Image 1: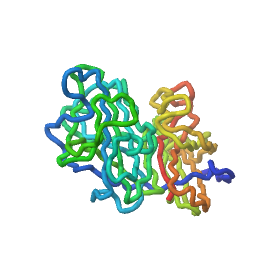
Image 2: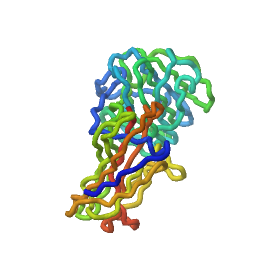
Image 3: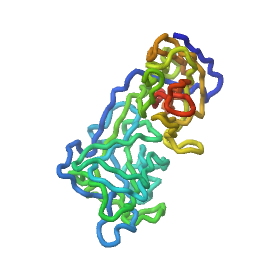
Image 4: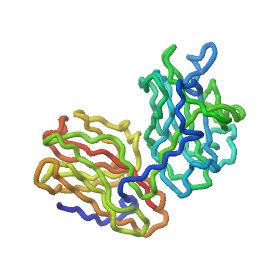
Length: 347
């Protein structure tokens, strides 16, 4: 295997870490029991006459006292909702992050300081089967949870089609929430309430661990390049790398590193190139060229070893990585295959 060893000279190119397969911790607030048949609840429809014309926004807070939250800092990479049925939404925006508020206020951004969109599913048909199931959404901006913090999930929805909406499992206990059933994009909502609400799920990975997402696409021999990692990302430490496997041998591969997923600089992500190939992250920090080793289709390998400098400011940095590879057997005009992508944070 031929390696490309990097000398990192700027802060941007120093923000790299990776790890073995992550051990996911799943937190279900306020319980993990599936509702059968599912209940119907906010914010996936608005009750009463004229509901089609209304926008609903709601925030839920999982308090730091919730027993299922991890006892050490972790990276939250996905948020899940318990859904069933189908519907198309004119507006379906998911936000999520940590908060230091001890109780919800009527100010949306005070409850959730990070107002970046995690998922925008507006205009897309959503269908999850006739019975309740957990459906998880990758976060465009994964966040580090530290014990003692609250986690706030924020949803803004507006139904598009009369008679079509998603069933949503309700919590079994009174839940702290801020809800406005005729939301007008104003910064202040009504008074918070403590009654029924949605169940939601948080999926968290150890800091320094790689969490894979997205799909790669096949090239020569039908093999799909795979992104994995070796070692653990620790400030001031070496001994980890981003690896390429199951790839085409003896060809140019590009290692891509960036800070964003879900929204590119000018093009929404993932960006499809045909043949099932997609760019899942924005390579805005660093690109390294590696000539893959191996000798048989599917036996191609690559490796980018990197050391994290001893800078405490890098702790908690969240980055994204993906491999692209020149392959004339790829199912697109670019002649490029892509691996899956991965997200990781520095410990």
